[in-house]
Amino acid sequence: MKTILITLLIATISALLMGQQKLHTIKKNGMEVQWHHEKDKILFKITAPTTGWVTIGFNESNTITGAYLLMGRVCQNDAEVVEHFTIGPGNYVPIQTLDDKILISEVSGFEANAVTTISFSVAVSSTCTYQKNLAAGTPYWMTLAYSSEDDFQHHSMMRTSVRIKL
Image 1 (spheres, rainbow, N blue to C red):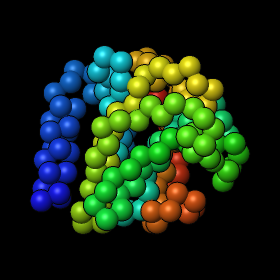
Image 2: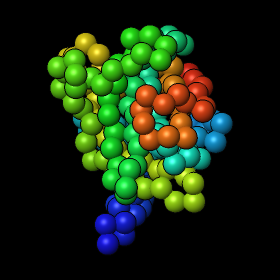
Image 3: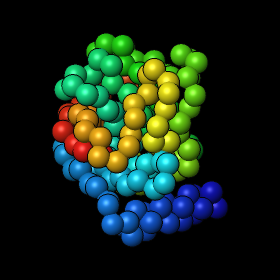
Image 4: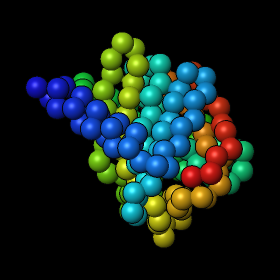
């Protein structure tokens, strides 16, 4: 029953994403990220060929240091997205441990046929040090990554970056 509800929720969010005029899509190395802005939040849908974690990140430069990461996973049919700040390569910490306000909401996701799909929303603006302003039109380097494992500390099997404008 829970799986059916999650699937319906994902389908509804996907339909809403498709109905927006400003739907943005990035596809690279088997991973797809879709997003659009809605009032004071941005909605993301991430799909990747893995049953491990999936991640998108934002930074002003094409480096991982200083990046704001949104790391998601589905464990036992339960989707989770955790905000991280990257101190350096391989050294990222959950923002919640840095006493910043969590901006993630509306998390849903599922795994099917060795593919993970996660949808969530993020508040557009933040006064916190470790989060990024995700307002429409803001330019960033977007990191796209995924792993074969659900453990967020497990190394990525694919990581790349693309220049985007939110």
